[in-house]
Length: 295
Image (cartoon, rainbow, N blue to C red; front, side, top):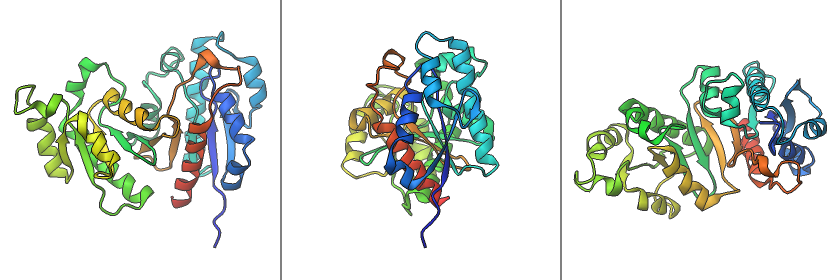
């Protein structure tokens, strides 16, 4: 039996950036229309005129207002998903500084979605080559050690396992921990966090490692692991973006509905020039549609 095409909310993101252009490209893509129906959520709610948004806004628009509108669109999209009006959400990029100026204290989509749904979430960047999950997200590097607790690691492992089992049909996911310190501490020479914190949690939760950052992602690319949990943002994001930039998709684990987004930012510097690459957004929509049919 053919399943009905899922209806997905797609937000315009920061209206000063390339989000509106990417959304319009998705609306114009026949292959996208074959697999899902898109409901645009933007500055004035739903069913907005994307062309008007592109024409009205641009890099010179109000930062605070752009942040508020981008945040409001996410709130509205979550309301639609929780009410069952849509089966998933695809978000165009927003500007984290603008989001704060607009009245939203969450440092990004992942944290805002967790706040709106009351769920524990994890941020996963996924491509056909590699899956990376963050144990901590948008933090200054000096704050990572305080945030990287046993509970944070347990949550990341649990959400990764559940996500891979439910969304990717992997019955027994092989989950590796990326070490925090160089060479996984090298027997305590470069810190004991990996032996004192990461290794016990990995053993408790049925994960593997921790393995040094300079080899664990190579091993994952060779097929040894189904996902790697990175201790902090940049070590994980650098790996996935070097391996798969333009084809990776941001997937929020732990939500009661699928949410995806492209693997890049607002690109305000090229907004409105017609040169934005929509490949990652296309991957994000197609993946969200596939996940929504499994929900």
